[in-house]
Image (cartoon, helix red, strand yellow):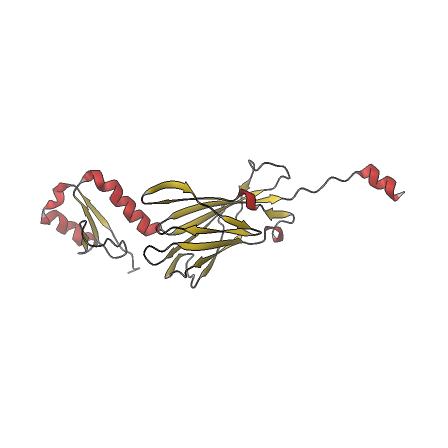
Length: 220
């Protein structure tokens, strides 16, 4: 009733008979993918794989169809005016906007997004996620802009030099992804069927120390 879709995975040559396969079809539906044609996680009901050794690849294909392309940003905040960021903590409650080109055919996250731009708010762990659908084989140019951190915590600023991103596809493990940072965000190219994770840092601007004695003597 909610429009949910069940994908059943049939693995092993024991499913070569029709009776076992029919039981799975009663659970999920009659659209069976057995290696021929096109697998579409949105419409396929049964993913049939006779060779157990290929199950991992089958599940990976399903996962990437379900989760890619996507970009997850984690915002960390360093509230101590020092040179390191080892003590940075998650930054919840900050707005993050993603502009995607070409325009997605539809958005999955955040819910209700339309057009080329979507905005989300970082959760309690500092994460903000974006996921969209695009034409087959097409990479996406994504520009991520964060809310001015100084408007939330005076003195807090985005440090573009610390931005890092990595991605993986069905065929690649996590690999560094090049970014072009700017004053309040960055731009990156997200490959088709890629899951991207990025980390951005806000830092407290260190206030220069004042020589009290010199300042007082000058006033005199």
